[in-house]
Image (cartoon, rainbow, N blue to C red; front, side):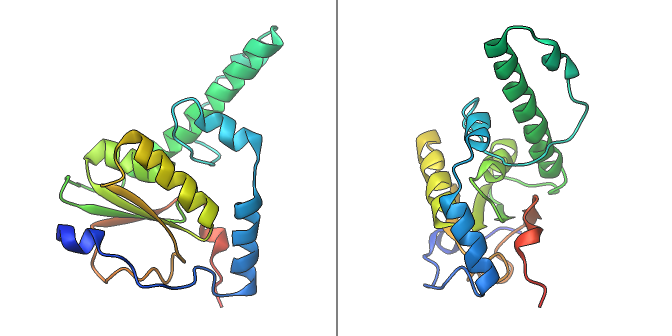
Length: 182
């Protein structure tokens, strides 16, 4: 499915991202979160994922005797694993083209949307309950020069304001725990 450029860039209606006490608490947590591990991993290539990762870990990084080099190697290995997870999921989005648009539900700091864009050339819209994460991800897209193709929004993934059928594919990577099933 493709959408017109006008629909892809049209402003969303004003709405509140968090619809409940729980979602407000999630947003407050991520708006305040400054975990240096999450930020350190992304500094490797400016792809911020915040995921566990998939694949076999290179445990030899733990054998490094130089403390500074050991930290560098562990950081690089953790980032490799989490990036492998994003690539694995992106590979399941289906046959996409630059004319397509992807929805990244619970995008966090935006790494998954960038991965999808880099792989397929498609447009991507990510949503997160955290205004801080949406702003961070938007700045990363701007720095990469892809902010015209990859956009981030402080929205609830279950009530985005996007029109039905606006996306060719959708994904969620480790953020379903923020959905209230009631």
